Length: 193
Image (cartoon, rainbow, N blue to C red):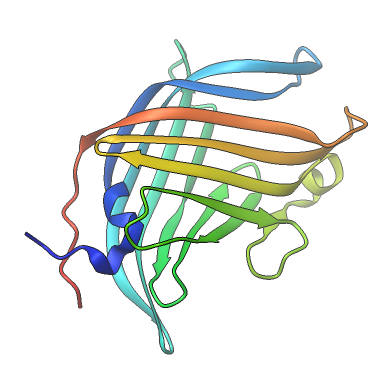
């Protein structure tokens, strides 16, 4: 059996995941109001590492995600990025780009054997932060992001909340997503370096 402790809690996320029970609560521009969208999702988390930043050594997962509205052939949302584990600080990080022009680096402290953890990012933070293009900054700026992740064997569940300042709403708007996915392919964790 391969030692996977150098990947911390990310070892259990490695693989290809699929789920059809996603619920996206967001502003629907065509209707001019908030609404729910059911979606299916495909996630690939491929192991890599180590990556060295001076004395810091990170192990990670190359992350790709796509979501489709049920019954539609083209994805309405995609992401690419990395999951990272810093064993010295005991931080899990998820850095990803959304092709609408947003970049998020969320992080949180947890234990190496954790089966659930929470990551956060704030727009005004220099450590775990959010960056938007000019249009989104002016019209639908993300000010806060939180994701709760839980893994139970071959089931990966999450719920996330992106707080937006939008021209259509007087109060901050909570764009939420939740899903439960099944691992359809496992990836082997490479041995420690």
